[in-house]
Amino acid sequence: MEGKLIAIGRIETPYGSLDECPRNVDPDGPPCELILDPPYEKALEGLGPGDRVLILYWFEGADRSRLTQHRHGGGPLRGTFALRSPHRPNPIAAAALPIVSIEGNRIVVRGMDCLDGTPLLDIKPA
Image (cartoon, rainbow, N blue to C red):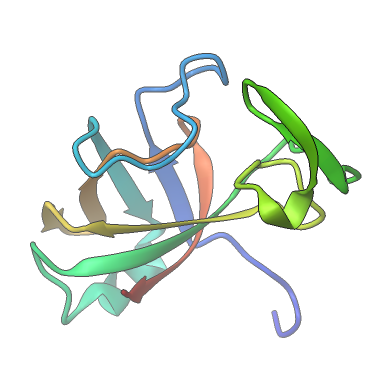
């Protein structure tokens, strides 16, 4: 698998459409679960409730050709790298949030900004 990006699991959120999805993470938002594929469960050892983690995930369906765009809600045209938009050459998203709980291969956090079923790429201490 060297040289290839692979998902290590998925993210469960209450959002089924982009219209429902918030535009940014919110530590006071609804509970969301990071569900790791079984082979990666052992990699959670050493993490616990209260630890802040950097969560990397993949915005599927993003327009990867947009180099300039407007902020959500308007404003001047800006470069994609100056925005948090999911539409970018490599639609990798990041959130730094505290762990609420861990049970088996499931980590509960609050306030993710992605659709239910979003591919989970990595988790790192923040």
